[in-house]
Length: 86
Length: 97
Image (cartoon, rainbow over all chains, first blue to last red):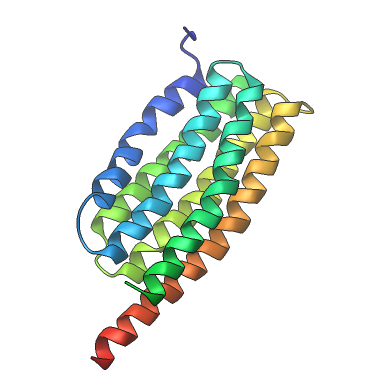
């Protein structure tokens, strides 16, 4: 269990904005959801960064880096799909 | 001094994220709403990356934080453009019907 440090406090403080993104992404028109998904992805990257620093495990920083690199083609394909066929 | 700087940058990053979340909830137009993730990515990402660099400069985690920030900003710009283009095309096709 990590002791309470500024990175852990910041990670906990980022949960409500992440919850907002999940809330907005869960209902409404597609145009609203896609933007919320992008916002949620950014929040997830920040959360993973701060948690890895809070746990003092620098190797865990590979996880947000992978998330950034994977979310790019994912969102790109999704928007392309929405643009053409939905 | 270093601890205070870390606290200030982390607090700024969190405040910007909260502001972005409020913008996501409050704005009505999809194009207006698109500003929220872009703003949060650039400003909050910068604050968090600086906090990491200040906490442990010239280390592997500082380098990784910079790489994550650069990757996040560059992909966010492209994704924001792609999403705006998709929204525009969908709005145009709806008008054409």
